[in-house]
Length: 234
Image 1 (cartoon, rainbow, N blue to C red):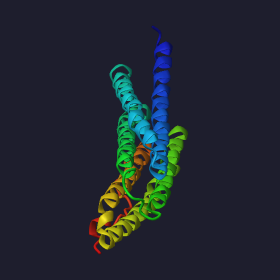
Image 2 (image 1 turned 45 degrees about the vertical axis):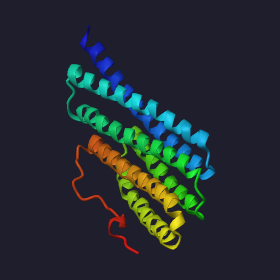
Image 3 (image 1 turned 90 degrees about the vertical axis):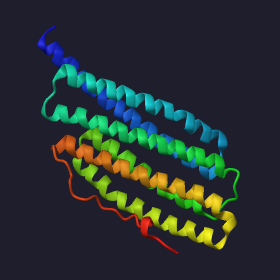
Image 4 (image 1 turned 180 degrees about the vertical axis):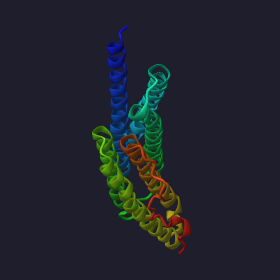
């Protein structure tokens, strides 16, 4: 096998790694959107489909892991290529966790379908989900285009998700304090909101990996956090 052929195969597998991550990210975005649609419409069948759909994301993570390990072992990559391969392992892990959170929202939706509706809280949570879905889309675009500035913008945008989470947390605590019968429903909604907040955190981590790929820089400054739920009291 000639050196040119080896290089060609290596580059093709690097492109395949990008494609797998893009597919994972697209599925995560779709899963989250479907999970929120199921919650708002109280659609148990759609929620069940979201739960089942998580398997594909898990399978893709395994493919990324296998391909990345193979590239390191056989290709002996250096510099930007090595950064890409190492970062891809972390990006895939973050995306797999996003899939898990979407699945968890699907499970909560099935429980919520049997509970009373709490005002417009579901719509507020859906707005929060729209923000998070935007983070996923922008992070994927930044990865595909190797756009570190867009990745840094994703990192900053997590503050807005944190603020929305804090607001929802206070709102749901108030509902529970005023109406003890709402505690079960509100508890599930609190978990849904927390799942979305964690998705935002994982996409922030993805954004940091993109900066590492492009600039070779590990962002070590403390990421901006606006989530105040840990210190919130009524």
